[in-house]
Amino acid sequence: MTSGQFVFGFEHRPALGEESFLVAPGNRDAVAWIDRWPDWPGRVLAIHGPEGCGKSHLAHVWRRRSGARSLRARDLSERRLEAWPDGASDTVVEDGDRGVDETALFHLVNLVREDRGSLLLTSRRAPARWDVALPDLRSRLAAAQAVAIDRPDDALVGAVLAKRFRDRQLVVADDVVAYLVARMERSFAAIGGTVAALDALSLAERRAITVPLARRVLEAAGTGEED
Image (tube, rainbow, N blue to C red; front, side, top):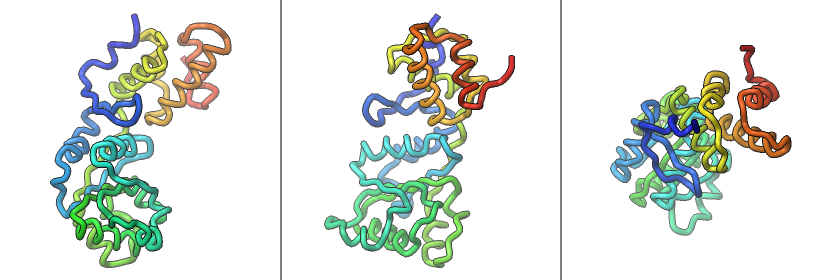
């Protein structure tokens, strides 16, 4: 039996390249707000959640739909804003709670509103909980629509694993996927790394992907557990 059973019940949304975004209970509210675009209160939407929960992936979905520019918060500056000849328009700022230039972000929010564009922020914490010293920016962030994404649950981890294996044209039995789901880190980054490592090891040793092979990959990553 292949790992196909793990994809049942999930809606696929197009993202970048060959990837797709799977809609699940933990991200359904965030997806609904992406679907509401451009009807965002104050033209700003903030998606927050733990590392590896899929914030960036969903931001890619919106970028593909809107044609928005994207940058990391640490790369945002007033000089960079001045270099945008067509104004702010639609923009993604990722990792907004990690060392953002507060003045630049405040100006960006204002530019987006003036240009009738949209701003999507991603972060680990809700904007109202960011450590912000600039009162005007703090007020803007508190007014932004904020929606959380939870860490992937077992069903979603299994579905994404199955899809990643299929993308690489790998035939993997359900017991291997179930073994991985029960033991691996709950993040999309870990899923991608695990599938890539299994693919490489399988090719190097010219053997099928089995539970023993999966155990070795997880142990090498420091996430394996004793049976």
